[in-house]
Image (cartoon, rainbow, N blue to C red; front, side, top):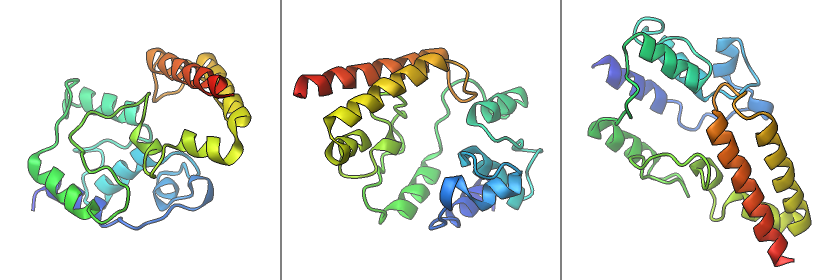
Length: 182
């Protein structure tokens, strides 16, 4: 079995693993940064499990850093990376029975307007907020998030000024939309 197939197998073997409160995971504990976003640490953990950490895949805790390190190591290029059909089929098969999970993993990931991680339920999370907390509180959330994105634009290691300002604009547009419903 190729290392490529092995890393997909080890990742799929983690199906069903649940994180604890505040991003408490075995991946973060292994990395030494528990209670932090762990998606990138998971990739490093998988690489470590099959013995390719720091040879084929560098150890990294942030996606942007990982991509930069892999580019520096000539593991990848700055062009968009498209997984092989076999990998997509295996991921789709493994996730087929998970409710509400979008299975079109070939589409480009939308980071601003309707990111997949806000759309795993029947309605988008912001719509849930409106239903649960009401228009006024959701408007406050929009206003505060717009402020957050403006103030930290480009400062988060996994983001850019452009992306943060697009998120700010999305929050302000959502605020205006909610205000018009009042």
